Image 1 (cartoon, rainbow, N blue to C red):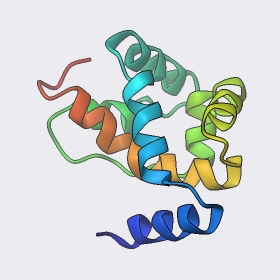
Image 2: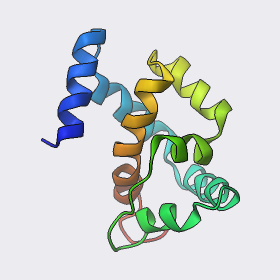
Image 3: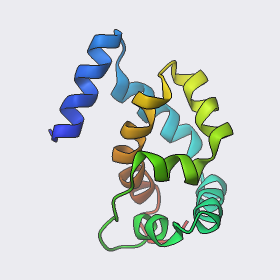
Length: 113
């Protein structure tokens, strides 16, 4: 398991929740083709479209920072995810920065959304 994965587990254990399960559940729910297209559109608006397209394409996934995740998703979506998961934004955003690129990649195995 990666360093980030270990940290996510430790944070989840400290909070008394299964952070991986909560994130996977929310990512699975939010990542249908229309939502992926919305993420691409928001990323384009934020000047981060190339990063998100790398997750969809067949090459390597470009990394993203927690601040960039907030820019891509927007404050209202972040607050929705905070409410759904019960996680504070300062825990959720770094976890999403780690997990979202791979989740989008797996939802777009043919390289298209």
